[in-house]
Length: 491
Figure 1 (spheres, rainbow, N blue to C red):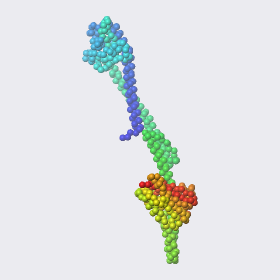
Figure 2 (cartoon, rainbow, N blue to C red; figure 1 turned 135 degrees about the vertical axis):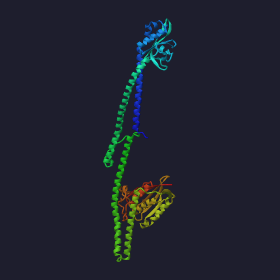
Figure 3 (cartoon, rainbow, N blue to C red; figure 1 turned 90 degrees about the horizontal axis):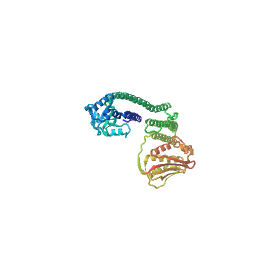
Figure 4 (cartoon, helix red, strand yellow; figure 1 turned 60 degrees about the vertical axis):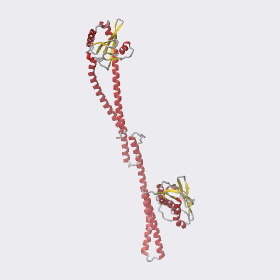
């Protein structure tokens, strides 16, 4: 399961909050405990020393262990939070007021006692607890001398077992209260953090929703609404979503404008084509009706002439319909390519031979430059033949009687060939060059040879070359001619 950024942030913040709270609570409790121990030890700093000086039994040295035990018992009754021990100089317990079973160790480390007596360390100083084999507690200590001889140490545990037992109940209640307060604090903090995070999360979502509603209300036209720009953030899902929506809106708007433009162009083209289709169709129908109605009264020459005119209009109508279907097929984007490697000169000579009759009628010359070449190309031979045929047909229609047309082939680089179809015909006005590849656009000299044309040849040529991953360009001057250029892949 993928965890989002905000889920990770929420989990991390909650865990961090709990960890910091636990750490602060532990540190605060430890600091409080240490401060309390220091204060207690400092308060009873001279307790053992005063007991040693004020009690005759201890002041004169210890000889009677039983009497000392009774003394400790009396002192513990007066101060139940203290435990009194007499320890030999080596650390052995000599006397104490407790059941023998309550004593867990008979020997304590005297080093902390020496440090306490000599004030060598800062408080609190902890010593071994005889009633617990592992625990240490604060204490007060004083040396006991008999003359010059050290008899041992008076070792007073501050906060003994009775104190711990009484304090444990109070501490449990305190801990329970603190736990409840802590849990309540965590819940409140989590609630506040959740509210803030939800606010942070829902605010950009709300803005994105407003953008979507505004875009929908504007009819999905981006130029009618101002969308919020989102900062680039790779790890913020909301900003990524907002940025993706803006890109989607841009694409939808672009496609919407394109569809409107295409729809407008198609309506205009259909209007023009309906006129172009009616012209040869009406002529065809007229001559056929004439032949049908007056067939017997027409002489053989008139009959033949009417048939030729009708046939010519039928061919013109067929050519125009074929071009319409071809253009629609190309616009549909379902054209397949049959790429192959073949020698370019063979195709060029075949095309020249195909146009030989029309070239002779207008006394035009069509040459291939260089005449001898061995270039191999990798493309769709049928679509390339259609491109060159359209360009040569266009050059023938716009060339004067006796004009020249050439197909020039040059090496663009090691991977491409540059082809150009050049004529010295009528040329095209400079301001019309940008529109000659639009379907149904006719330049001002498009009917130079006084024949009707569909105006679709160059549009089809451009679409075919784009299928072959090539772009066509044009250069022209009025009265000097026109040249069309494109590139092919070599193999």
